[in-house]
Image: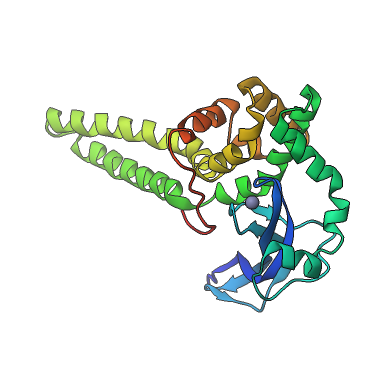
Length: 261
Ligand SMILES: [Zn+2]
């Protein structure tokens, strides 16, 4: 007898903390979510599952990041101002972050040297690496890809069934099948980077705008990030980031909340 068993990743909000957001480049409040892997039988969860780690989401830019390994002193059960949260959940952060604020000052003034600029871009890429992975799955792009594959198979069956019949229908079905195969293949290869890019690009623009990087600088940082084991390079390129920067200058930045497509 076949028994359907699968494992589902679940997120549960557990409170708020204060931390430094590398995208907003300032102190921010973050929502903390627990990540659990829960085994299910016929979609019914078996218990609470195993704790995989924690995610933090900046309440301002909505960037989703992995919580730091050392964790936080406490988690507040209420959302408050970052200035109030920091003493409760992350005491000593502001004393430890002197260098961090000094660097933000240099970013704003444009006084970083070449090596510091590359390191700064890699820091932003590292902060968004988790989000690149999470947001590359699901979304309308995945649905569209599945739909195109289904349509391709339907048209393929139509081609086989009409092959012996009217030559006009044979050509119509065969050409449509070839077209659907081309569209499906393109979508299979690109839908993850399309989905991730939709979430990543506005945040990369916000974080990198003060640096005014060149395409070569972003590409060099992406390559360095890849050598350090980051996955974000699979989903964005320097050219894509610069193109988004140019179009963001013409329209206001709207950062969507997590969970939205
Ligand atoms: Zn932020």
